[in-house]
Amino acid sequence: MKKYQFAVWCLWLAGGVICAVGVAVSGSAWAQESVSIRAMLTKSVPADDPTASAWNSVAASQFPMSPQVHWPTRIQEVTVKDVRVRGLHDGKQVAILLEYDDPTQDPDDAAAIEFMVGDKKAHFAHGQPMAEVEGGAVNIWFWKNKDAKALDMNAKGFGTLKVQDQQDLKGKGVYQDGKWKVVFSRAVTTGDANDTQFNPGEFINIAFAVWDGKKDPASGDLKEKGSQKAVSSWWYFRVDPQPDYTSYFYALLAIGLAAGFEFVVIRKLRKGPSA
Image 1: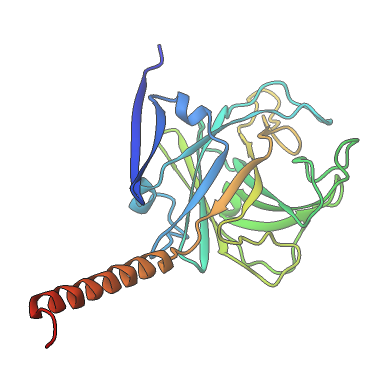
Image 2 (image 1 turned 45 degrees about the vertical axis):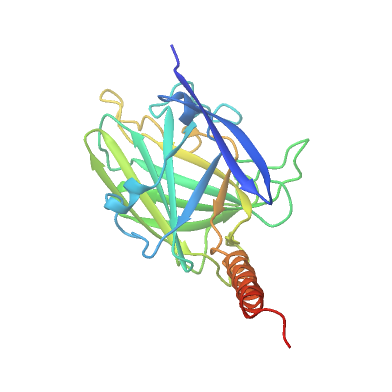
C-alpha cells in the first residue's frame, strides 16, 4: 500500500498569507511519475566519473522503458525496464547520468540519449516522419561498452543516422553490482547546428534507448541490436538557470531606505520642534 504525507507551505508576503499544499509519495511511486530531469547548477561537473559522490546529491528521475515494436525489426521483450536519470551543469558543461539494471556485463551493452533539434516535432525513433509528426531532426548521444567512448550523432528519419564531424561529446560507463552507470557530458552550447542547445531555464525533449548486448548461447546472436532495443517516449530536460539575486538587492535597498527614513524621523522627534 502506498504511503502519503501531506505538507503545507506558507509564505507571509505584504501582510498576506499564501499557502500551498503538497503531497509526497513514498517509495518508487514518486519516481514512476517523473516527467522531467533537472540539471542542477553546481561548481564542478563530474564529466567523466559516473560514480562521483556529487551525483548522490541529485534526485533521480525514473522513466519506464519498453520494447521497440513500432518498426521492423521489432522485439517483444527487453532486459531493461526503466532508467534512472540525473543531471548537473556548471554553466559551461552539462552532464547526464543514466543508471539501469543489467544482470550481465557484455561488450555490446549500449545506451543512448536523444534530443529534438530545431522547431519541427520529431518522433523518438530517429525523427522518423509519421502522419501526426512531420519529421524533425534529432541529436543522439550514443555509448557502447566495447568502444569505451560516446559518439555524437544526428538523424532525420530512418536511414539518415550519421556520426557528426565535430565530436565534442564525452561518455563513460561503469558496471557495478548488476547496474550500469553511464555519464554523458558536453558543452552547454555549441556552434554546431546539428547539436541540441541547452538554454538555461528552457525545457527540451529527451528520450532514452538501451541495448542488452548479451549473446544467445546457442546461436551466438545478440539479444538486442539495432532497432531491437528498450526505448522510452519523449520526456523533458531542463538546465537550471543562474540564480537571480536582483530581488534580494531591491529588498535590501528597500530595507535600507526604510531604516534611514526611520532614523531621520526619530532623530527629529528627539530634537523637538525647532525654535
